[in-house]
Amino acid sequence: MKSPISALLFSSVFLLGCSLFGKYSEVEYNNLIVEGMNQSSLALEETTELYNQTLPGVITEEHEIDINEMEDSFKNAQKLFENSADLLNLESRNIEQQNAVRTELGTYRSAAELYLETYDAMLTYYRDGDYKEDLTKVETLDETLHTHYTTFIEANNDLVDTLESFVTQ
Image 1 (cartoon, helix red, strand yellow):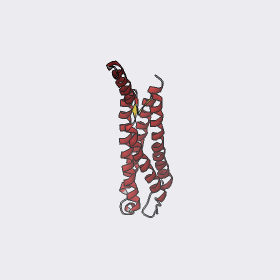
Image 2 (cartoon, one colour):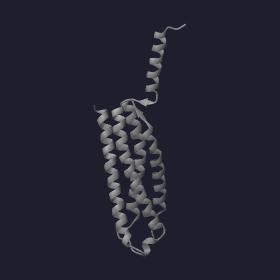
Image 3 (cartoon, helix red, strand yellow):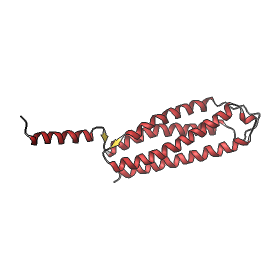
Image 4 (tube, helix red, strand yellow):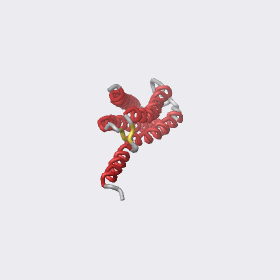
């Protein structure tokens, strides 16, 4: 028969092990977040670069705009962005770090989602040839897309700063 003290000791060690199971050190947690974030961030950056390379500075009704490469890039960015949702489920042993990062990651994801929605609307506009009927949306879409991309970059930078603050402590 085991003594109550050894049973209590076993229970305490077991519960401690369970509470740490699946939780990452500050450095491991940061590395996993950065790894997942980099994939989606680079994919979103590629969509913007392709947008800037594909569309002429001045668009007229006569332009034939091939958006196939932009659509492929968008699909890739969207897939990688969706995969980044898993980052919200990671757990750090430092609850303060976890809460701060999750907050910034939520802002990052919201900004990315808004950018991708706008990018999708832009693709539809050019794919359907709506620009040939109504050029007034060209400037509005361009400005909105760049504004949302800038917001995304700011959210990305804020998340990086938050992650960095837990490495340099």
